Length: 223
Ligand SMILES: *Cc1c(COP(=O)(O)O)cnc(C)c1O
Image 1: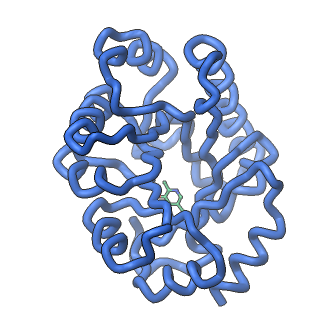
Image 2 (image 1 turned 135 degrees about the vertical axis):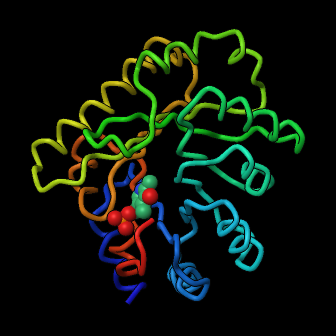
């Protein structure tokens, strides 16, 4: 089923959109099945779970961290992570930079924005991002690279609202690109859209979609 699900989704994705297969809570055998069907990018939201899966699965997998990252867990993923989608504070970015330096790596990161109405979701607002990007501390961070933005829409059936929230993230991206990253081609990613709303996200300009349950089936517990 995983192979068929992947093929169905891939067939609907425009060329400029990259699929992150969100495999959190799923057993290694499910990830292997997706890998055998050609999937190379996987998204996880717990540091230790991602590290454990990384240790047993093929080396050419690109691991994307998509969940709220606690500072004391950074060390488990820094040696191998490809992209951290969920930078939601200046402190976290600074801590990632520090750990990346220890490993002599430059780690790609996205700034996560709070675009939903739900209070529970993490993320910066535009003012906080401006403060971060214009700070002296940021200028000293040589072991991270900001590659774009990430956001999660409100969980709602109101598709107009979801359109508006994704449009807002795209406009945040455009603003930051214009004000801070014009000369930096790596600032190009807009990570938005999950199983239920990724077609809307694509219409609004997503370059990375994070799809879990549509590939692997429903999860056993919410996370
Ligand atoms: C779980 C999760 C997803 C995938 O959710 P699905 O609805 O299963 O596709 C995407 N992004 C984040 C940040 C997640 O935590």
